[in-house]
Length: 297
Figure 1 (tube, rainbow, N blue to C red):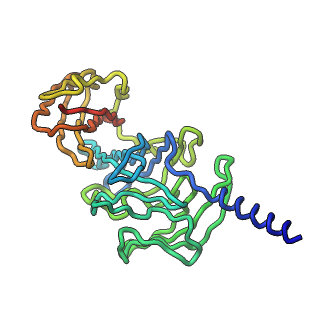
Figure 2 (figure 1 turned 30 degrees about the vertical axis):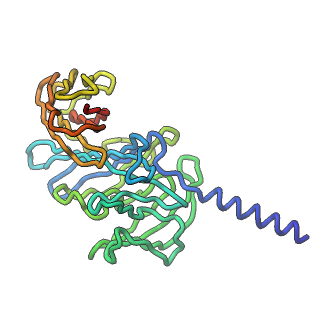
């Protein structure tokens, strides 16, 4: 009898442990959030692009793209940056680009029980309080959820965090400290999907707020960079005939060059001032971000 009870306990424990393993940023993971701050309207896209290592930690690289314009007129604004995240023991971490220096902050903690909380960036004013937990079916999968209250300075918001999906209401998790303080605040979950998970939320990937006048971009395969490796300069061909923002980042995720190319399909960039090493070149042509590896000899 004792052996049966022991086996049952082991089985239940194993079942709970297996069930509680979170899925975070799998292949194809893409989030969209609405931007709607006073006169600025648009959307933000966060997309998993590759695995990488940051300050010795294997993690996942995401690209955030904020796209918006003022309803009163003016040009379309596009901002993008690299984000880094990983999960371990049912906790999701994000690299704090503001503080840096190996500062990984807790983004989501599925281990916290109701009444508990976690802090972000060792700040007493930025914390997430767990109010309730449970599970429910999303796209046919039984996913854990946490109902939380976010405390950020003098403001509070309530949100539901799903395993795999993440924050699915009002809180923008990828910038909880507002490190892009010159940009409009981002809020309002739109949708999430990945390569094996159908779209959850608003089926319109641009959250029904797509700025006008944007044509489809070139694909990654059409745009070429040569020579690569290069010593003094690189040539980029087959750009879209729109405004292109070209940026080069080093392995510390620091921007070392920024170039704007307007209405030209080909351009040349001088890289003679860059140190030897590997860089990432990003091209934003009005709708999508294209990433290329660049070797400087």
